[in-house]
Every structure is written in C-alpha cells, then in structure tokens.
Image (cartoon, rainbow, N blue to C red):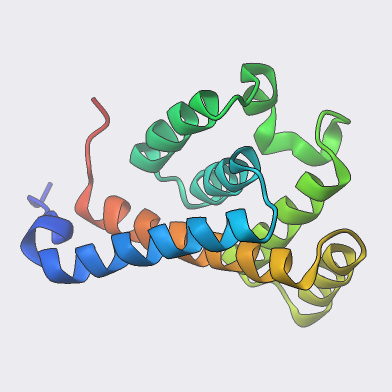
Length: 149
C-alpha cells in the first residue's frame, strides 16, 4: 500500500481554515437551537455513509460526552427502522443523508420537504452546514488514512 500524506499536516493553513469553519458551524447550530447531540448524530451518520473510521471514533465519543445514549448510537445506521429518534432528529438525519449522497432530484426534494415540516429555516441551514463540514473532514481523514488508536 502506498504511504499516505496526512493532508492536514502537509497543508496546515487549509486544515486550520476547515477547523475554523467547523467551529463557526457548531456555533450556528447552537444559535439555531439544535442540541449538540443532534449535531453529533449528523456527524456520525455522515461518517457512517462515508466509511470514515477516524471521524466515527471522534464523534461517537463526542456524542456520549454530550449526553447521547449508547443504545441510540448502536442503531443509528438503521434510524429509519426504530422509534428511538425524535421527528427533529429524523428530519436532520434525512437532510444530512441527502446532503451527503446527493440523491436524485425527487429524493432530495422529498428530504427537504420533510425537513421543512419539522425544522426552522435556521435549523435546516445549520444541518446542511454540519453535513457539508463533516463530509470535508471525512475526506481529509479517509484520503489521509488517519488511524484510529
């Protein structure tokens, strides 16, 4: 296997800008009234979809610190098949998935319409920004092959 460059270390200014963006997005989510647990559920679900072991490790710990329940984390990949998630969380997860996988226009529109029924405009914007940001971090970690210790 080819040795990977840790692009966060190779280009620290670019990585620092991404970290600053993440901090601004986290503040935006809080200002929109999204609990930290919702932000971490979005981070985790997007990281599951992208297969980012490093981010899954980081954000599962962050979710637990924020008060998330281990049982809900265990079934997050199948969130549609359980009643353990609130309507707000379900809307956020669906919107995050649509942001990550960029489905066909009809599926994307359906996720957005469902989100409009439960989330405020500020919350929709914040969820999309959380998903966009964690997608960027996933790519940094996956392409750098960051190890999970």
